[in-house]
Length: 266
Image: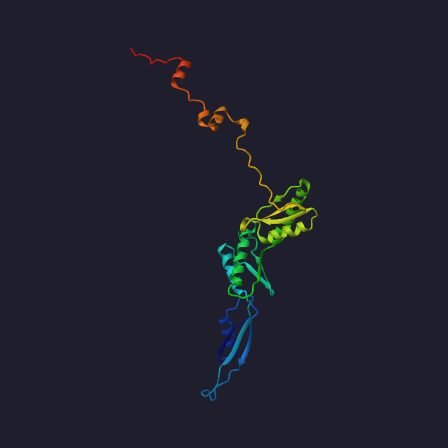
């Protein structure tokens, strides 16, 4: 998409400067100028003549709106002077964020903040358009490091599945991360994988090859107080009322310890 401004002035230089100023292009934009009309001096200083006309233009990305949107989010997160590099083809948009050494606020816990920015940017890019473009956003080398960690996780748990013959359910993951797990498991003999759950709770389950596609049974929560540690009083409290021992009366206490008479004052 070409953005342009056409301005006129007494000289070519003046018209060029005015056009560039009104174009207000980004600092990294490759701005070009074109002289449309040469200035013509007036006859005898009074008659005829015409100003110079200059066109200033640059090729803007179709996704400049996404760039401004991301920049606003990063500013709200306290990121100063981030660099946003956008590369796109007919189907995909790849966005790289350079935030210096301040990546923690952008990435978030397990990449949750980065995934949220990616999701919202996808909505902005595809809003009001007929086609659909996939959007991927990376901050530094986070995606590469996360992928390596997920592949290691898949291999380690696959070995446990083969060793013990039991299914293992991993923590909930987003579609990108689940895809990495599935791809890695496909390279391992003796283990299959499938996804269960809905929305943010959807997770990958690893099972022995050819086994039943059921989620791994959740671990039983340990008892807070084992039976052997319960006191007789706690056991009595768990029994129905008709089986609980009758409370001690004051009379029985007196019989056991003797009757206590108040002392008489002289």
